[in-house]
Image 1 (cartoon, rainbow, N blue to C red):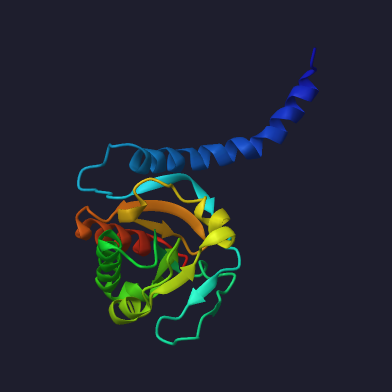
Image 2: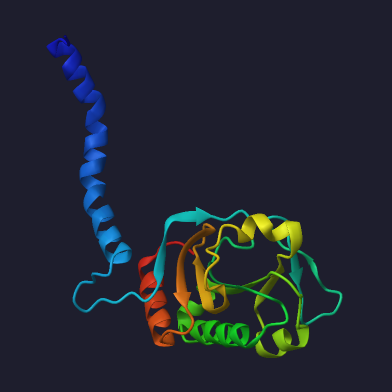
Length: 205
C-alpha cells in the first residue's frame, strides 16, 4: 500500500508530462483531423496525402547527374535533401510519358510559387536506365538528378511508398523527412495552393 508521501512524489514527477500533454494534445488532434481524415474545416482544402509517421531519409552515396556537362557527374552531397523543401519524383531515367508529364507538373508548380520558389528544390531519383540527358538539360534546368540504381539507392527508395510512383510527387521537408505525396493527375492548382500555405506557416527551410 502506497503512502500519501509516495503518491505525492509520483504526482510531482508526472506533473511536467501532464502539462506537456495538456499543451500539445489539441495541436495533435487538430493535425490528425486535418491531414489524417477526409474532414476539412469550411474554406480549407488539402490535396495531398500525409505520410504518417514522417520518414527520415538518409541518402546513401549517390551520383549526381550533370545533364548540362558531359563527364561532370560526381558524388552528391550527403545533405542533398536537407536545407530546402524538396519536390521529388522517382522514375526511370529514359523518362516515359508519365515521367515527362509529372516532371512538367513539378516544374510548373515550382515556378508558380513566385517569391517562395527559392525555398524549394526539384529532385529526380532515377531507378533505372539513366539518363536522357538531352531531355533533362533542355526541359528541366536546375533539376537535381540522382542516380539511385542498384544497391546504392535500394535503401533510400525503400522509404518511399511503392504504389503509383509513376504519377506521384513526394514532399520532403528541410530536415530530410518524407512527409507528403501528391497525385500529378490531380488539379495542379491544388498542389501550388497547398505549398503556399505550408511555406507561409513553416519557419524552416
